[in-house]
Picture 1 (cartoon, one colour):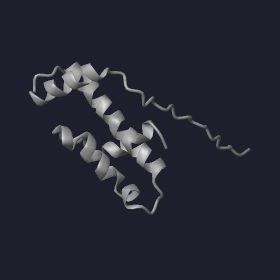
Picture 2 (cartoon, one colour):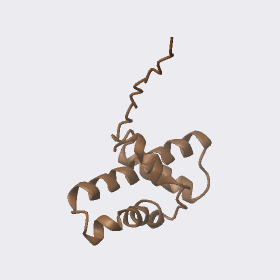
Picture 3 (cartoon, rainbow, N blue to C red):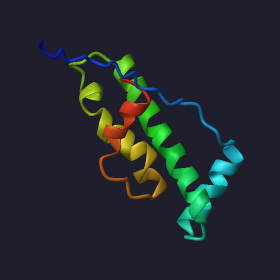
Length: 104
């Protein structure tokens, strides 16, 4: 009697890339974060929205350009600058690996 190892197929649930904040509230939260007068709840909400913007940027560059193009190769840096650095924020550590929750 041998024991058979049973493989379990775990299906990862993808998170939605839709934005949950209006443009008006989003801009208000960015101003609050720059002036360092933002609450923890709003800060968390803004971080999630920035992460979605970053992941969506990478996804569009991946689909739009061929693999050998310079834009495809530099997609992480391009999106990092456009989402975090142009707004004056320090990007979170290892943010590009967290995009796997949103797409392949």
